[in-house]
Image (cartoon, rainbow, N blue to C red):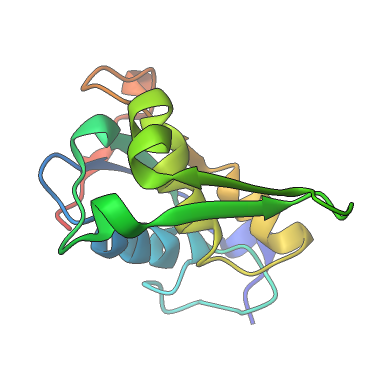
Length: 138
């Protein structure tokens, strides 16, 4: 069982240029969760921080760019909102990756803490140079 004082955090840099969205999200979710470490404990945040650059250059396979739809429901009658992937990607390319990663993390408070260690940028400039992130191949 991991303890808070045993956890060593590392920063990773992922370049999403011409990478497939699901594969990037799966690898990043695994790093955020801490599954790559020997001290992995399911109920404790043992994961590392991840910086994703070039989010606007990620791609999907097949016809998903035309068919994929993001849905959210307010809970009220007629409160279903749908946004196509193309529209979401042109307006907010970082949200596309954030949603893909968030849905691969556990729900609840633990998942929210893990998601805070994710930084996503649409282009190749990022603000985490001081953390000296290691380059991670996906």
